[in-house]
Length: 479
Ligand code: CS2
Image (cartoon, rainbow, N blue to C red):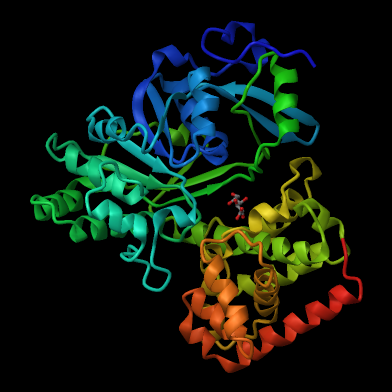
């Protein structure tokens, strides 16, 4: 394959007309700071912002900030923030360039610029996608993990904060002098993510020895909004083959290409403190309370995703669609959804059976190549939101929870592998080494659920299902 020129503002004219951005990037200025410029943001919020900008021309440009990876900075900076999104449509892929990201920073290499941007009155929205582990929450109470070494280092006055919450607090401290209100809209899969992040920022400021600490706490309380949001689009990690395919479609080399499914949803709490793009004209839903949408998505979509990931890995399935091809894939999602749906409160415009049908179709999309291993990572932080919340509700209401027990057994089985990718990997390993008679209880404690660890019938059921899965694998449960 010939190597093409690199995508950038200069080479935009070489793109096929149908692949050009919907807006003129030169007409944008930094008005949004996004923390966590991974594939998900590029395939989701950045696309809504571009579509809203195409309608209203208000100059909404996004400065994307990478927390750790320099690869994404090296990919996007020479491209002036431009990248392509390929949607895996049923009738074939469609690739086009998204124009809303105008600059890319690295959170610590460019720490001062980041603080300056958060303080700039021209920036009125901050969004975040830093994954569950990026927030450094205490798994038990949900507050800031004040024993986390990086949180401690930021609190001790590290020259540039390494944690997201430290970056937000430092930026807000600088911003207070301008008095300009701001909205911080988290876009990670956490229930009540706005309130969760508000609490973390307040915890951080309260734990500093800053002389203006009390005034800053009051100002955050009065001037900063933390709307909750629900985001949805399946976006697998980009592969080398995806980069080649994007290059072939564009006629330009794009090191920042992302792929996603056609489906997309963004529900935002209508509680912003300052100017924001008119995302509602781009298909987003602005609602007074996101909780019913949030809980349904976390428990049904993300919850069944995790179930398929752990069961699928046990059976040797590489992708979610491979699991859906097995004779047990669809029945297990349906059984899971039937059980978990009993924990959902119905809301007027939520049609749970239709939602489950659409999930099955989305999971079965072979063009996505969504690896079970990608979803399985960081389970210790994902599972409490996805499974433990409904498990607690259902047990309190006296329901049986056989499918959730199966799910927890599949995760427990997965944690027996030495090579797992999880921030609690060391503790999970120790649970198997030091608690050989009762590892499941210890695993539940690690998930922040000491009360479930004392629920003897539940623990016995998880144990029994774990052994059944071992026997199933031995008997040839396969993909
Ligand atoms: C997935 C999510 O990796 C995971 O844990 O469950 O990333 C999922 O694909 C998205 O939340 C879909 O909106």
